[in-house]
Length: 288
Image 1: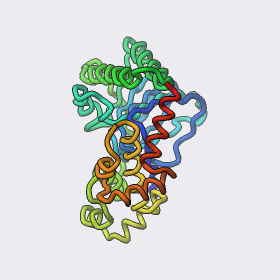
Image 2 (image 1 turned 30 degrees about the horizontal axis):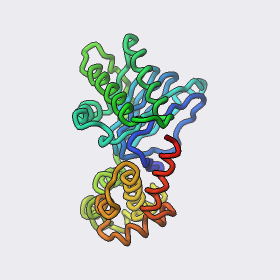
Image 3 (image 1 turned 120 degrees about the vertical axis):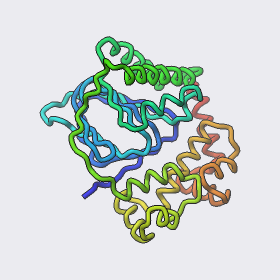
Image 4 (image 1 turned 180 degrees about the vertical axis):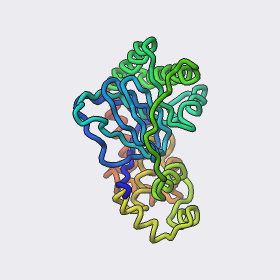
């Protein structure tokens, strides 16, 4: 039986995190709208990605496309050594001139690269600088992070294209994709358009009542709660990162009625869109 699906929502276009120590297996698969880069500095893991399992070792760099189900598990219970860095980002975070790199690294994947010894120092330095910059609130922080991320992507594409690069990772087993995974992927990509149980029913040729039960069972929330969570999370990101007017943001994330958007936004966040933007700006100013 397929386990519950967790949906990861981030309010920012870029996120980086390092985790060290004893890290148990993830209980549930999770899915998100961001691209993910996973680098294992120490240890061994089993990576479940879109119904398949991959054996990940030290110095493996993993590229996971957005809207793919994935989770990591302990490879050997007697080995507690674990050190990894994860980057999540939206394509909107990159400059237009760098977006083409995403197609090479993330489509038709997952792509898993074993970083050769001669490249490790440069990769480690890049990731360490990204972590440091992300944790500080210095002037032009995003510009610097975009530059560092782009450098990492360029270097990775060159490794991917190099005939000398070791891409001999193990695909342990395959599995089938269930209905809920396909529907979550569809919603994550189309949430700004007309979206309802009826739309899903027509798209996937499934009964609306069945879809409703499926959502509650695998995500822990109703379809409409899930859709609102996706839309409001994107609205929060736009309020934080753009100067768009609130009514334009409402339309951009899929709400044709501004009053309904305000009501849903306040119910989820406890603040109105204007209060949320003002609060975020105050925090940003106090940290700079």
